[in-house]
Image 1 (spheres, helix red, strand yellow):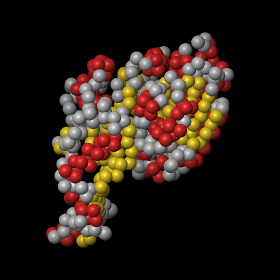
Image 2: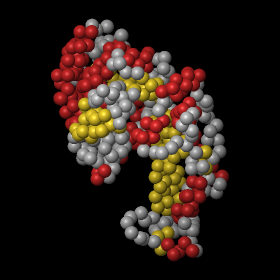
Image 3: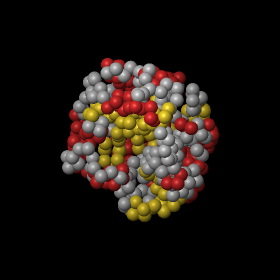
Image 4: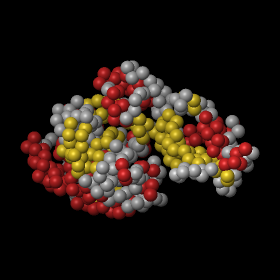
Length: 479
């Protein structure tokens, strides 16, 4: 166990090099890496590999996949314990740049008003999801190595460039590198866990996901326009594939999508475990629905927000069927009267315990459509993986909690997050239970003006504390 003076030495290094560390974050955010558009991903992988080399990793590889590469690196400190560090370096596309207060790839630092007070924030695509936390962790590793010579644990970094696509080729990498990765005690996913008031929200797992497209077309249906859109006056005597898709969707759920009507859809869903029930009851004591509504800019929840336990249970342990986007025919400015020849929508299903097989969900939907006469509607599965969860009693979770407490922060423990990440690969395949961790704040992932806080206030931690937290955690887990 290091002496307090040794940890303070690392902290001093962070303080002295903080401007350089922030510049490294800015450099990485400025490098686009939009996986869906294949924009800058290869360049970002090379830049990330260079960072791993700078902090002393003995083995750094850019591992090709069938689309975007995984950047793999090893930092062997001859320690007894090995940690896997999962990272993602790809980002979502940029929304309307007119909505950004600062250009999304300039990574400028600007004043920002949070509900808790004024801060300075780095604005940029990927800043919170997750280039900011990723580089902050790398910087923290540098600080330890540069001051004390080595880490208290061995690290194996796995940075993928396809998380925003559903991690389609990460399983291939894990299977190929399984022998190298086996034996790690746990997996960590560097993040910033504070909300706008500085409350730390630690999640122990995530829902799974199935993402797919449905398409109705005149060609498959044998009715309506077959090859191209035609004049809308023809609706008087020709059927519409667009209405065909809408009719099919209406059979899959009711009450604005609250209740899924696909046969067998809920068969594998189970009630929360005893441990989850305890966590939910404790979480309900500190949960603040009003702040969630303010952050999301919504007026109300589906369920009674005064029953916090039930609200949280529905949010975290309910499977969902969501329409992400739907389009057909002409959607440009002005008028263009057409009868479209096809209609398409993107749909995601969030999987909860024990919905373990994404392919089963697709099969249920296929059977549902076929049984109702919609066998012409095409299903194209884009990605999918199961849910994952780590026990609150696991040593890696306890090390995270004690590290948070050492910075005089309370922690709110969430048994799951409603979002999805491919953590099942680490929990199940590699038997190295995974957890998100980190202090600091950022928000607006996937939205305009995505940001991370650089200089905090009396509630929200700044980027200096974010760096120091990772240092503290590595020593706490290493012991």
